[in-house]
Image (cartoon, rainbow over all chains, first blue to last red; front, side):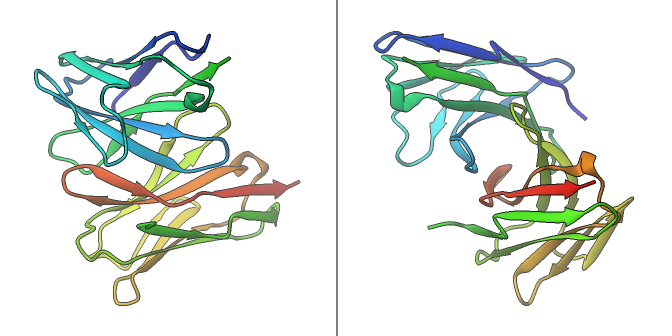
Length: 115
Length: 111
């Protein structure tokens, strides 16, 4: 399967600041990557689909101006949480799907804590 | 509206026992049903998956049973081990790798 990495694994930031989370595909070129959000003891909720070289597609209810996604290369997608607030504290997970398969591979996640 | 409903929320099983987790869905457009295992602080890892044209799939101690007419599927973990203690999520695929996840089941296997 595919290997997906995320950086950082844990970040603490102050309210009002922005934080960038990186998602890398280490062994496959990913034209599409996905960003999920997971609150403690809850399920994963798809936030947006990241498309290489074009704009991301956001799920209903997700603020695109707050969660900026950039997919500048076939191996890197970034999620920037702008003007973070404590309610943005969550576990952010990216994933990629391999072309020709139904399988989806997840990164290890990034825990964001906004103080 | 929750696309995939999962139960139970938590499960305690003795070592060597069978763990059973159930999921139900409504959307008949779903075409792929994976199960993921997640340990605390880690991303989900694909465990086993099934397509709706198959009624059962077995991989080692893990079995998916799929009932298309009832729109239900379940995960059976045979000979459960303490190392299986984790949170399990069912999911359903729709529209090119868009996945909806169940609410998760926290499994605790007692030694």
